[in-house]
Image (cartoon, one colour):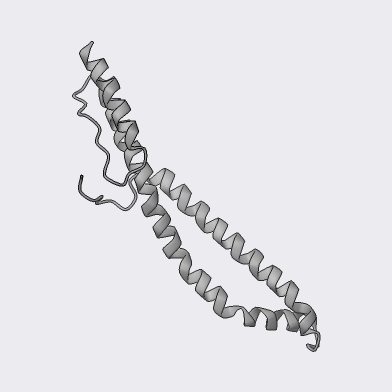
Length: 135
């Protein structure tokens, strides 16, 4: 078993795009949830003098939920990016080994960390590496 990663983001372009996408999806979900909930609560808010006052009251009722969901957003992004290391890290190591092998440099066998995705890909590459080096 190899040691833990030292970097939080190992493939910044891919993982950054993933983090942004998760944040956007989360915010769209939150916006739509609040909108639908407000619309469904409006008939019960007819005692307010204006539509805006009823909408404000419906929003205030959801303030605690909105706050909790917004507070959880960084945790969800962080956890998703940590999980993405399990596929971004192996691809980065594989890419480095392919470049080394292509440039006829010493390309050591590829070993993925325990818990990484695509463990069998390392075995497939190492078999190919052995064939290339044998030629």
